[in-house]
Length: 319
Image 1 (tube, one colour):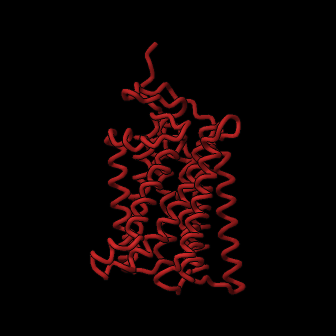
Image 2 (cartoon, rainbow, N blue to C red):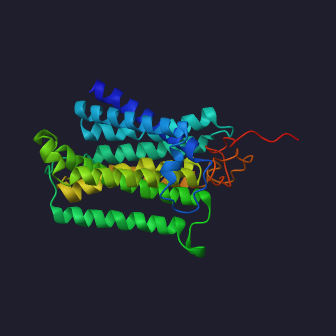
């Protein structure tokens, strides 16, 4: 258990570092429209590539943690990612993280941990029926498309504020990551069957496709606005969506006793309260930063804030 806890904390730190690095790399690129070439443009930025490396390392730590500990133990610890992100913002940002911001972040992390510990999804089957996968895929795709339509829709129907766009895309990304986690579960059940069985079945290709789509979606979220707006969606909706998909696809069950349901409801209430408090934070609204540095050739400079809330986008012009 000690190994699982240490590895889960390491995974949380790596994923938080990944979010910060990717936000630094994406902050100078405007994301007021959907761009399929965004990943290619970001790949020219070393700090963004460093974030991808941290993300891969965090995934490796998470898999190792799950090898030594149960999902109900590891997943709540991974919610510490949000607190690590706020720690980065407090150390590196020029705008002070206030006590209410810390309380909001702690409330969301604690609420998610309480919900997962009380629900403790368990049981189930190793494979899900094809019809269930189609329904889950269509539902996830519909939610993601709705998020994209809200963020980049035509005319006045789009989300106009950069922070709101980042929050909407962050939520859509978290749900997409939850679906990717379900695909990983299906894929992992075939690892012992050999390379031939792996590459002749659909999960490996679905994993590549959904993984690439979620990376593109996350990049747009991080390029659209401050990290404090997109990170809650990443951290909260990923495990919640994965838990619901585990119940629907793999027949997992959650605890439904009176005390368990009360704890689950309390956990969700803490998450909602934390999101509501953070949505009114100065870290999300009113970012006034100096003009950004000159963008790469062919890119558009981002119109607003620095890489992280309160973090200057570039050196201020003299005079």
